[in-house]
Amino acid sequence: MSTIYSEAALLQPTQQFYSSQSEFQLESGRKLSNLSLVYQTWGRLNEDKSNVIWVCHALTGNHRVQEWWGDLFGEGKCFDPNDYFIIAVNVPGSAYGSTGPLSQDLISEEQFDSFPVLTIRDMVAGLELVRKELAIERIHALIGASLGGQQVLEWSLLIPEKIDYIIPIATNLKHSPFGIAFNEAQRMAIQADPTFYSKQENGGEAGLKAARAIGMLSYRTYEGYQITQSEEDNSGFDDFKASSYQKYQGEKLASRFNAFSYWILSKAMDSHNVFRNRDATILNQCKIPALVIGIDSDLLFPIKEQEEIANQLPNATLVRLQSDFGHDGFLVEIEILTNHIKQFLKIN
Image (cartoon, rainbow, N blue to C red; front, top):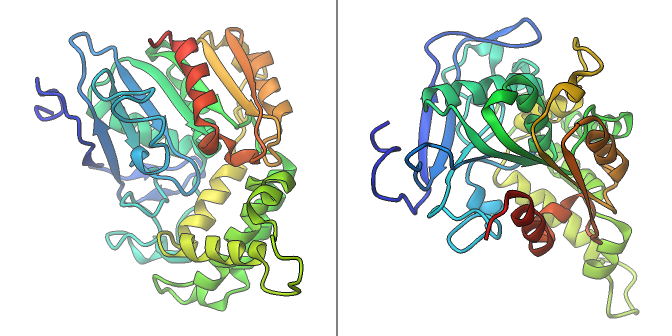
């Protein structure tokens, strides 16, 4: 704690760990025998502890926001660690150090393909443990896209009195049948690889590569592939750029992730439903100012889903971000994204 609240600005991201002293209760009724979460802090708290920016990461993202949102976070960027105390937690089930299917300290019934199903609410429960550990009583802005946006919405309903602003991006109130179908197609690819059931760390690796190739089709668009993968030479009849790109994306993910975490986190995304066991007017009661950002070409989280969010949150502003790159537009259209966020949060 003394390191986190040091007088000297921590301009380099600092990785830290949280370990639970008891079993972690899951929404399904099951329990994890223990829970460890890896997280990153960046910058320093100001005197009244009012400058916390909390980032919720997407499906295969992590707590190291500078690696995947580096144009938005960093010195001289929208969220500058000279001005803000930036926190991001790697969610349970992931592949970057938090408790997940490959964790060696779990009992055997919780490892590999036997890892229990998680929900977005379970992830948020983990975020709450870290918030309390750090004695953070106020979050200035809570931001996340996709699976991260789902966490933003769930958490804002849990602790609305502790959050000043929320920025859910390219996300939804309830995961759609179309989104669930896409995720199931990816899990079927993983299941088709018999090594997924081998109880080995690299189990399901070939299936994961195929799953990622399927997933890329939902993250991008026809226009995006036309821009980046068109053939300049019209004489070819095999080995196309688009084919190589799909294979490359599969290989790239397999080098940093695992099939078991992909399976678990895609299931968690499917579980997302802010109305589950709640009053249908729950969002109307959330008064937090919200900047709801949708991408006009998003196939996986179409703009109508963000319109639904904005229509139900009483203090919401909806931004329709134009992009040829679909769901991944939140990683591509950084200049436009930055301008909207700065205006919303009144950042100079």
